[in-house]
Length: 76
Image 1: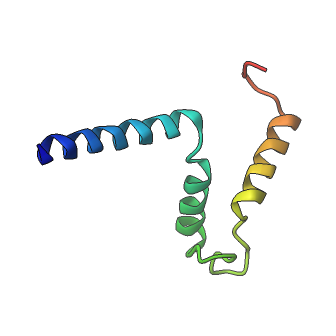
Image 2 (image 1 turned 90 degrees about the horizontal axis):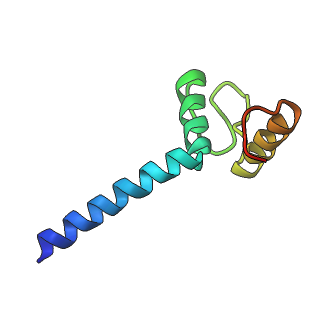
């Protein structure tokens, strides 16, 4: 029974991961990972060379602003 529950949990996590990717909810995580790889570190607020890493709130505001300035294919 535990094996079945573990398999269901693993499947549910996989589906949730996929849906997050499709909806773009993982964009901030990707941004932080890119910043760390490109600029050498992503501790809270800095990237290792003095350039600050945007907070999640700043990131989504910037993302929305860029979409408003440069609309691409979208439903609305």
